[in-house]
Length: 407
Image 1 (cartoon, rainbow, N blue to C red):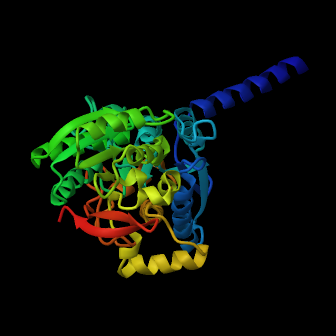
Image 2: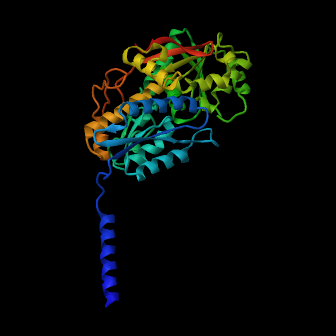
């Protein structure tokens, strides 16, 4: 008899477990909301991303870690590995899956590299979807139809609902203003190189298309081996074509410093042949990699204005940053802060711990002025309406504002 009673109890317990397992997922029950960031925290990107993380922390600290009845926990995740020295596909994929599995994670701030975003967007898209807010991705194909490769951007959104946003302008603007700036500088013949990654090749392709529209002669365009010991043979070949300007689409971590060194080593000084790159090399790590003597006169474009040009609320934020961290921020720090403010504002407006509701609130961000970048909105693709671009040069081992671009 006891065995029958025990069997009945076990059967009831088993049915209860099955019922719970099969129940539809709803909003998580606890009052903790986690915001995670996935950025390269290992390798030479760390100096830049340290300041991005500081910006996110500032936003959370200003809210005292609370939004309504919710406690906000911020987690700083690394998508780089020591072996790679930069972002790693397996690590970014692991981070995205870890975020999906944690029902307290409501916002994913990232990524820093556009190639990493290609991997995480679809994973997070199928989970709620879980919203992303990038402080740094600029590859157009992540969001804009007809601006990238075949099938982009729809192939990144299996649920057919967008879950990815960014608070920085995309490269279809930055690459174009770079070519326009080259024209203004009286360059007539350009040679284009890229690091063969999503971001680098994408912006180099945009630069090439606009350069041709501007009437510049494109002497060649090729991808480099990012792991090469040197580029002397390549630069000797390029020198023989007598360019006015060499454009590099890529990131510091793909050997940009060595590329510049060898340009100069073969006799193409920066005051004779301009070296221009995008925001992928706009970091102190590039100056360190190439050496201060070699970077003098290098030109860099950026999707925004430089730190020394901040005014109004941005200037006040800069003072607060320096006071809090006793250091100067790099250029993407302010976008980390803005991404954090967007996330907290969306959580407040959603008023519930539900991934879909918070995603909807992020995409409903309009005339946002609770951050420090001015009044802006997300469009239907998840892109910011801010289009300000600037050009800087390196002088005395520092990035110095030169001009506004695309005005």
